[in-house]
Length: 340
Ligand SMILES: [Zn+2]
Image (cartoon, rainbow, N blue to C red; front, side):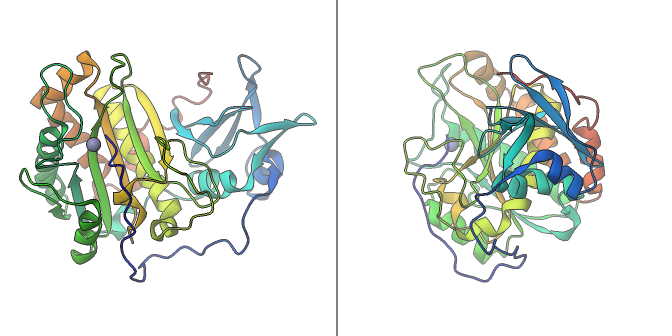
């Protein structure tokens, strides 16, 4: 489960700052105009049913957008927008924040610059008295599976040249703010928090989600009842673009390797281990322990090994981003219909 308390950690100067927008970006722009501005083909309509759906493409991949839906598809994988695209006078209009924080990083950049980074903090969720959620099968706690996954990932990542630190290596609790401070004191370039999910008492929901911090000015995908102050500008918001690129890369690799349902890249503002990070940071929910079939897979060490390999593969510093895009099936799923 997502750790719910919030922590405002870190006041250090970020090493990879991205300039904050000079003015709040609440403008709307025609998607055709935006595409033309960037030298891309005009957006093309794919279908009118169940929702009017359009695709816009760059050399990096394709983004499928549906009128009236915050769920988009990037190279076939769901990502969650801040605002519904709208249809005005026969044209698709997008909120400026979605253009700046979702479309721009994905369509206009060459992907996550993995080789620019060398020190990684893995954060096995929960620990000690804080068990996280429990398996619907036999009540085994989430904290055991997150630690096992991190311990499996560490040697794989070290083999590809990462310095890897775990926020915990045994069954102890650690506050969320201490996890942020741990990353700070270990000079982490990246932070990845590992979790398993629950929708109890629902036993059907399944799949993998990756979270990053919601950009300032945008509503979150998930609030879990917490306040979601849109204008809040948090330390980790300086990494909005890199957070998204990292999340997309990890999510695609896990879904591809495990065949788990793809619940996409989502945004949340209340996640304590992300808010204060002075580095790209994401949180992965690698399956639902409240779903009996998925819980059985998570409890199987072979599945956790495949998760570890998929995550380490996405983080492989020797391959660059192009290899990751090939893994994610770039170009093979363009035109996939959006689910309503
Ligand atoms: Zn958790």
